[in-house]
Image (cartoon, rainbow, N blue to C red; front, side, top):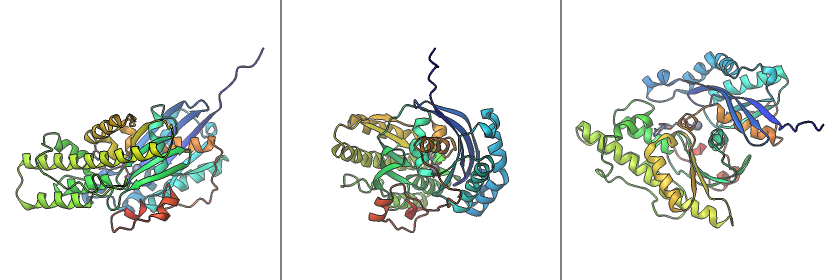
Length: 369
Ligand code: KG4
Ligand code: ZN
């Protein structure tokens, strides 16, 4: 009798601590591409940072230290696995707030060393890039818009660890624009989801706000003019509740339109330089949780005959399942990192593009992009 063929599988613990979420997850990737999220635990620090109106790096690092062991323990318990059942440990090694990154990376290294498991030092952006594959079949290659609090980039994702950057922001990230406009409207941190709630009762056509670079060549973004214009309007007069909702809706509409315009350009560029490529457009990152943004991008994709995919909301914002999956894909492809892998505050996914077109701005994380 011929023995049944078994499909290889990689079961990986992922750890994420690069910003204000302490997260751990166990993901199993089978050789036939099936992904099982066995657990995904995310502890948000929002309440600790809200009084300051943004993430305070030192507070974040301390909060990660306090709970990282418990969060990893919970992820293993929910997956119903012992450490001996793992094939590897993946931890975010950057880019991000380096104090926090060091906490999760050190925890990952300790487990890898104690259990004799391979370590995979994962780029947080690569995690967002694969996040869509946690819940859908999204074969490589695909075109990705990564829009989060620290990043706004259009990327051709060719395969595991192979990414080409088509465009990036020259000032703020899209999530940063959402957060700052929300803050000028007096909304609490993090402003993106709050602004979306306020915008639900507003009229997007009420205020004509600037839409930078629209129709221009290239796939870069700019949001600082929009942010300043919205802040000026918010400060200029006493706003009624309806005025505030209208301003929120107008700002959200301007961001969504701009993202869709740049994405449309990237789609054209992407197919022009890749004869016969599968037309798949993916959006990921916290801003992908925004309904108006998703709708605008879906329409842009439809107009360019691209299929459109976005991760479920829980995998748009920071989580460790995406880090575990990025780690599992790397492990399956034969990548390993050594235990002295450094924590990196800056770590561009496409190093060649970042070198050729360095972007230096005084923005929160501008140079990181
Ligand atoms: O991916 P993420 O959790 O963290 C980073 O890697 O930056 O993204 C967080 C960003 C924040 O700027 C947040 O305001 C924004 O995503 N965000 C939203 C929404 N949900 C999260 N922006 C607009 N609408 C939302 N519903
Ligand atoms: Zn993120």
